[in-house]
Length: 363
Ligand SMILES: *[C@@H]1O[C@H](CO)[C@@H](O)[C@H](O)[C@H]1NC(C)=O
Ligand SMILES: *[C@@H]1O[C@H](CO)[C@@H](O)[C@H](O)[C@H]1NC(C)=O
Ligand SMILES: *[C@@H]1O[C@H](CO)[C@@H](O)[C@H](O)[C@H]1NC(C)=O
Ligand SMILES: *[C@@H]1O[C@H](CO)[C@@H](O)[C@H](O)[C@H]1NC(C)=O
Picture (cartoon, rainbow, N blue to C red):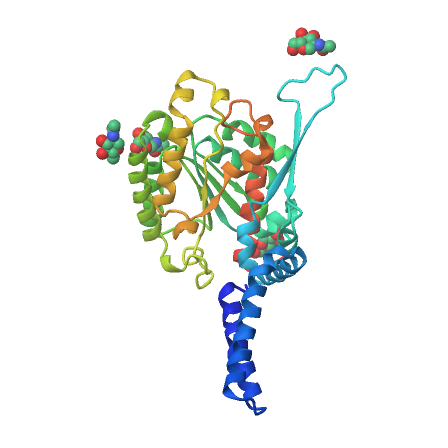
């Protein structure tokens, strides 16, 4: 990006070299100093006035945004620019209950997002991308919805009907192999960060790591332990476990040396963030009391302090369910905690587009 520093250096060069050039044209030292000073003042005034002239700053910012998207890696930061469209479904008796909303989603139409060319992958593109890979989704019910959404994408409707019941058995693991694309999907019931740490240890012991790992926890801890600093401690442990798991921990953004063996490739790691909690809609008194916005803020602080997330120098890319669920809004939830399938579908497509970006592929 053309930053302030570069502009400053450019200005300094002009101030220095233009009068020096003129000195070559036999100007006296005083005149050089005069031109130097005049140029300096002109540039300084110009720089400070630029923001007040929209056309100039538009030009400057469109220039810098086109430079930004040149490196596709920076598109990662636009992946969550998603808008939801919530429409009441017209029914002939106009008896509308909260389940009668149709939710659709898409990426925002801003210029950097368009330049990034994100796309909703169809079944065959998703299958190509995930062909031969091992995907693990671990966490609480939010993670279960993400796993279901992924299956929804790669399975046809018959296949989906047959797995839905199993996947929705409460509080249990679910593993399946989709033979046609050689993809293995494990859903691991892991409501606490300590469960996720155990899972990391298990990967390490077996020296076998998934290609894609999506995990998250927090809501159970908030409800049943209700101690943010304890949550923070468990996140620290999880972070150490993740870092010890991945051989090239300092280079998470890079792809590791691909030697054909899955266990050597650096896995793609995602943190499934907590959703927006709508206190008045939570369905028990205990939840309304313990899952207050103060508790939520304290838990969020622990997540950033733990440096688990890439944006804070950690290994995991945040799937920002909070921002997605907020964009979808209160029409998208009946219990203030679990959201319409569109939210989790969007999260899956964020994962897939991040995989495309990180593996430097385009469809
Ligand atoms: C509307 O819904 C109510 C309760 O859900 C039901 O009793 C009623 O029969 C419905 N009306 C029509 C026209 O279907
Ligand atoms: C998956 O990859 C294998 C070879 O690695 C190929 O034979 C197969 O056709 C692929 N399947 C899909 C659905 O792309
Ligand atoms: C998850 O961790 C909790 C607390 O450490 C433990 O009681 C529970 O048995 C674990 N659950 C699973 C599925 O491992
Ligand atoms: C909260 O957790 C911390 C760290 O595990 C612990 O030191 C503290 O005693 C706990 N607080 C309460 C009120 O249980």
